[in-house]
Length: 291
Length: 179
Image (cartoon, each protein chain N blue to C red):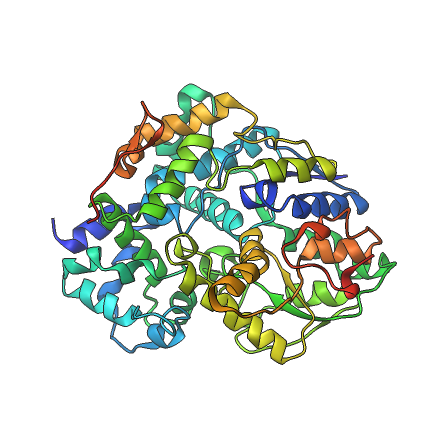
């Protein structure tokens, strides 16, 4: 039986716990268990905290990695930001012995030591590599019949030099996972564009930040897309709650349901809309996503 | 200290060669052409790099510096392998040190100092967590006070608390004049 330390971060447990519930349910269904990382904190966000003070960013991120190391478990994340910070910090500490020593010096009195013996994974990798497309397809009991816009976000794929998931201009992993549920992943203009939330833009410049989102939603609508599937809790908040903010700020309505990838897979496995927290989203689910 | 030295110092965590790479920029403009923020704001990636090359410190107080969402598109496409997004983060570190941190960003930082989370929990989510069969309070710094203490120790050690202007007596941000 495979086990992962589930790094929750902030937005998953504190705004969209449906993502947390769906992820645990889906992984359990395939015999994968998740364990708590007691006392974990904000990752902290790579584009925001990394922009304020990289040393503080590295120490806090390293602490989160060390807590999972102590359990001897690889980490799974459900947010590109969390994945971005923890995977990058882990990468830096594996490459730079002097920084590893500096981190360990700082946590000596707390009894924490960075060893570099676990992996930081994104939920997409666990779904694709540990479970696999074939097993996911075989387990579908309630196929999704909808046109989907895949939103990859940024920090799962980039910087490719650090992430190591291949060419970030032509990924297929999310499209393949979407299509395993029976849905159709439809190509749309600027598919790989950022949602607009990262780097502190959402906090500082909400109008500009939502303009990114608005462009993406309009591009999806133009192709007849009926739902957005994302891989990041922060993108998720921006695309879902962002539609309410777009309506208030710009008077434009898109009404596109937004689902996290494990919520979509959860529906295909027979879990109900309510069990996956989808009934509590800002944008109501349409009948295609109601079970 | 020259701007280049400061970028190296602030970006040390990312590697000197990484943040130094702005020196080899040939000003082709592929970064600006790739930038989703540049489509809708006055942020021009190529210009920022150009000003860094010239040692122009006005970049530090330019609000455009904060228009990048760190999407890494420019970084991936740069034909000279200039690690643009990392450079932007390092330069923002200098700007933050010099007091050019916006109020919303100071607030985000203060949430982490106060709760361990950039986005802390609220009552509505607690209720929803319960409905979903999850523990009402997640097993994070929200549940473990000693873990929060550990985060606070870090921000004190790095003087992050002072940089942000966090007042431990009132557990809130000091008032700051807009710079």
